Length: 229
Image 1 (cartoon, helix red, strand yellow):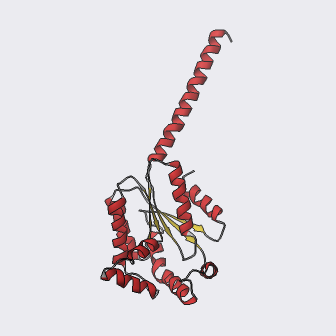
Image 2 (cartoon, one colour; image 1 turned 60 degrees about the vertical axis):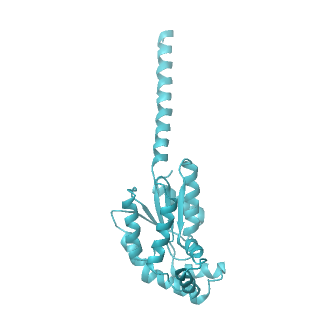
Image 3 (tube, one colour; image 1 turned 90 degrees about the horizontal axis):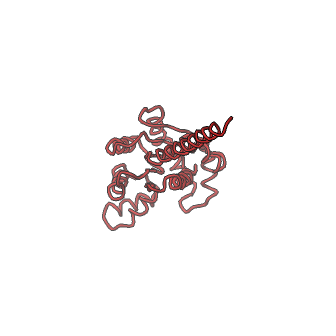
């Protein structure tokens, strides 16, 4: 091959390399611009909060230009009960007795966060919600109203027996035998029908993962299945 041929070959190779780099950057930019919504659901003690936090850190890493709005039902209720209104005091009494908060309060808390903090660009992570089918219907209207892409529902699945073992081991103030039984019974009567609402629903991507593994293994499967790597 002559000097001119070598120069032409080098030019072609350089151009191909440049195009590959450009295409890679375009794919990354496209991925960054894709908005995601996730719903984490599972029995008490399944580790859904931990998985939500790990996913949030990953989203912040791969898409630093957009924030992640994390709505966690438990923390919102604990903050809400601190107020002095009649409804807030009643909420505190229900929580102290280990009761289940009615849907209208839970939906009020979600919508309050969205109204004050969502600007249409953030990724959304719903943690520990919805619990009831009616709540799932209300949440469904959020995705339609904001014209959001198809959400992911991630069920971190553990057995009843494993949930009891974990809750007794972590020894939180509300993790007493009677309270644990109440929460797990609610899961069977209220959350399981909600799971059935999501599983097979064409409006959602439904992912069930085995939660009786290491935190790292569960996270790796979630990230792979939802296509973030």
